[in-house]
Image (cartoon, rainbow, N blue to C red; front, side, top):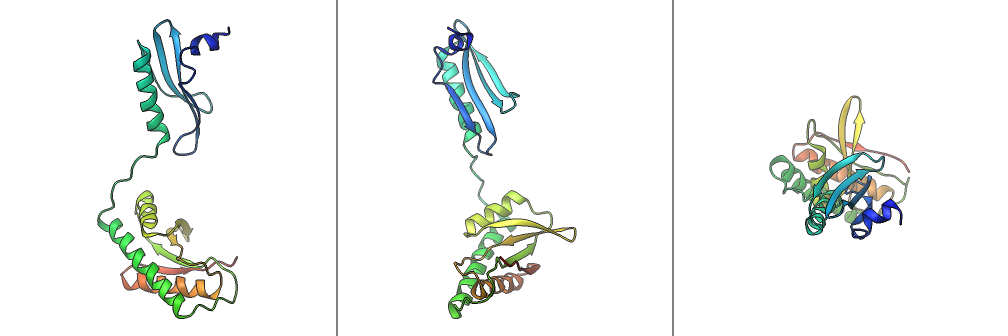
Length: 190
């Protein structure tokens, strides 16, 4: 029996190789280093220690392994949005509805296939909260660096790919401008 097999004969099922909640590769493992003494450890893909602990019994090792595994692989719950971020979410919902209404009024979808969307200037806003607001509103977003400033681009709620998408995005831009945001059209041909 190899040294690896010996240290893992009672803990082989306490082993995880895969992604953490951010997508980086990790290993979470329990090994019996001496009879009745266990190491619980998490390592990154390069073998660098993320966290480790030594315990005196298998039950404690099992419990620590479970806690470490959950902490590293389960995405932390997001806090409810408040303040300007909750307002952004609600305003995005209203803008998405304005875009859908514009598209329903004129569904013609000829023209150039595009990724037209609305862009907002949100200086010094927290990226994670802007992304959470977009997700809760029912849209996607990405940041766009333009002339030394960051803009956030929010996609319309549409299956259109030409003129109808453009009208939808422009209606969103007008709606958000009317709510007091610094807006601009994001235009990109496919």
